Length: 414
Ligand code: ZN
Ligand code: ZN
Image 1 (cartoon, rainbow, N blue to C red):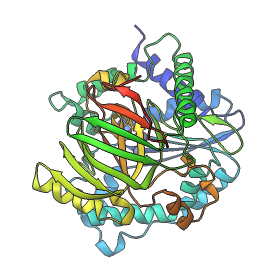
Image 2 (cartoon, rainbow, N blue to C red):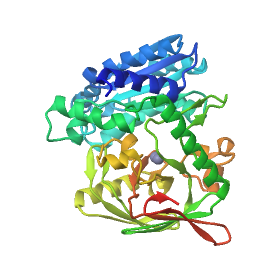
Image 3 (cartoon, rainbow, N blue to C red):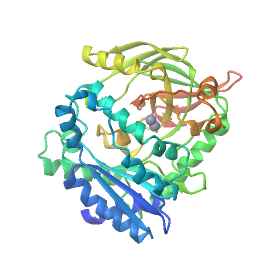
């Protein structure tokens, strides 16, 4: 059995070498977000791995999320749409020099649960507006980037509410080590092999050119149209310059972009959704011609939250992602609900309301907003994933001529 510090050091190496694929001479923008007790030690391990990989400079910032809470509690609401512009002038030159970007989260998923959702979204949108060029640099494949999570007190308390803080954090690390394949002799080799398998799966699915997928499971009977010229993605992505990197660790999904106008039927969630600190145990959505026409949740508060979410903008009532994950994935086998999208999203097949990925549509990088939506792409300020996969989910692929074939049975690849 490897020691704890050996495993966290191996995690840092994995992030730098497989996740970012940081190149000798590359600068690294390293942002830490969350509790200093847990995020700072891991950032130090990251810096060590980065310099060993030949990085020229690791440029760090750390953001204290409690400062966000204090601002929401104390600041005048009309000031919340301000975000300082210097953040962009600090980051953009490094992006222009083809540096890499890494965010390490150790955040408390429930920290802002009692705050006014409108104030939170004002604050988040202000940040998004200022940092939009960075978002575009990532979306356009200009840089290699990655976001990872490390266990902290808030996260551990939500996953293991009955354990004392220290014990909860330790248990959370123990739970994610095998998911990150860090318990294996050579984690890097294990990830290379896994990522290759995901890439093979995306090629196979892309070549199928299905016109739609049909999902059938408990409470679910849903047909999701796929865009003509869609591509499946997953595992490794490449920058425009051809540098391969893995933008999510862990990652188990292959995903593509649904047709915003061709989703019909009903879908029932298979795992709880953690949305801005509120946990919604289960709900159903009914779609007609791509749009949500009916929301059904067990509790009135959840119903209200979902109605609010779907009403955010026109694209918020339509789908922007369909992703397949086998039920035998290590995250799903852990049986733990992580309340963390990075983990939960990779536990089960899922769909997302809101913005879709242009990288999954041939030629979409050069399309205007109107052209992209006419093609079937979806635009929205939200992208909210929810799980629909289980060991009872069947998925069929439907060809243009109406023929169909099984893609998944009982939650596993056929
Ligand atoms: Zn996904
Ligand atoms: Zn997603």
